[in-house]
Length: 96
Image (tube, rainbow, N blue to C red):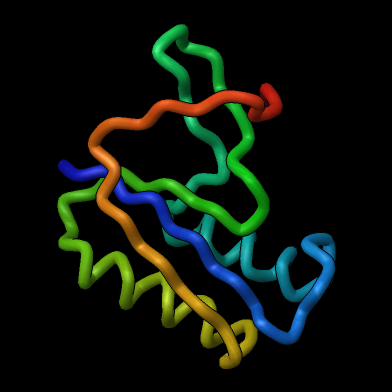
């Protein structure tokens, strides 16, 4: 299994609470992308807006293509970044 961090931006939408982002979050969750990350302490935190994490046997290309298809279904003017992230360190995120 690999862990991937995914960032999606809808270029024509300025506000992260915009209905298009709400739709994006719902569709990403249905595809098993999470908006929460677990610290080594076991505490869960919210990722920044429009960032997702997924643990999967899929390749980075497959994860990208799945996220891109979802983003395109919401707004075709988007950007998608996928990074394999076997190790994470974070601070300042809000707890769930």
